Length: 135
Length: 404
Image (tube, rainbow over all chains, first blue to last red; front, side, top):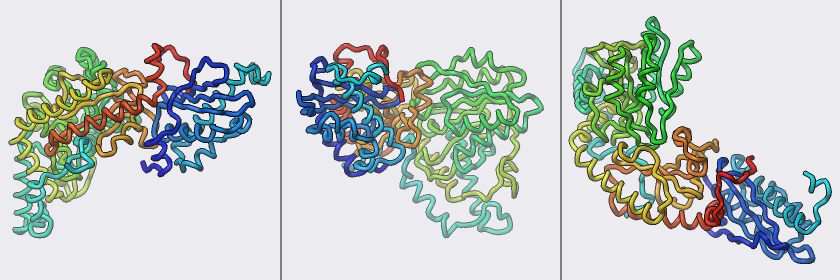
């Protein structure tokens, strides 16, 4: 399979690989995917008191496109607000990385990971909307 | 040393230069149709085909008259399975095979199921072996064919075909073996092993692509086949079509070389394979060898690397041409059905690499491949949440994953 230059770049030089303290109140962690599907993503954000994402880290088990999708997500998350982060769509990732149809699920997973991390942070900080808290 | 390094000899092999040399005159100079009986062009072609038949027969312990040319193993498998099914349907409509066979056996079997035949699909154990008692128990007086590969294409596990052949003979059913991966690489003898039908392919043994053969036993018992390709009645009516003389000559020469060099080549390749494997396992002690380590083809090894995913690993070692057990690179995202049927947990089935060495593989290449692989596995592990969890003492089988 031919990978786009951007996928190759993120695969070879992944941004923001690592972990944040998952027990810290200002850190939100999202783990999505399953080993049986061939991809698991862990995405973490550190949020300031003002609701700005001041750091983002990831670890991914998966194909090159999955690694690139999560690496790109951390780049986009850093420096943005929680509310803006919640608006990131998988289609933006597909476009930026030129993912082929068979790899679209990698971008979906990255979007899910962002949402899961945000929800985790909101849950810890009592900022989860009622309907989401129940879901 | 040139890169990329080719360690995928189980997929295909380059033509040996000696094979090419032998084939060349048959393109334009000695171009006759082997079926032309009325002139010297035809006679010369036929003589070359006969010589090749003899060479292939010698490699597997058969008689030249028992070798039938095909376009490769897929065709040979189809002809063996569908041809016997049709010929012997009056006896019964039951066939037996196993779940780790190549698609070229599985799919003809599935086709027969749609035509009113019954197929028994034998399961395999963790090393890829069938239970011989289960095989024996599955054979009834309605069983017309048992088809079991001599060696598996993904893990290299060798079925005990001599014992399987003896069981089939005692029970009075025909035995076909897809020996594509073994012929020319490890010894095999159709008489000693009680094989009735055997498929082989030239391009797996340093011959050209597009040519292969089916061995069809002529005595004790005489096996008959219903042809699947009708026309000019070539190959005693069992496979019509003008013979690929050039390809057949190449297959014959490839068989001769394999027979002469097999013993030394097996020793050389298994030593290289062990070296490659030891180097990897020393640095990555939790890597897992798949298949039957004590009973497999000498030139290949299949290794799973827990906590890293196969496709990303292949991407990282692009200077080394190998195969991933996970079919991620094709459109399907399923891990290999062979590895799954061994009972491998998902994170292992998704991360296996098949290394297959061959005639032109050097020690330098094996060392380079091992080192590249070790570096890349370590890099990907640092990126893997599964590796991190395991380091933290998490039992991955107890984690509630969000499947998608």
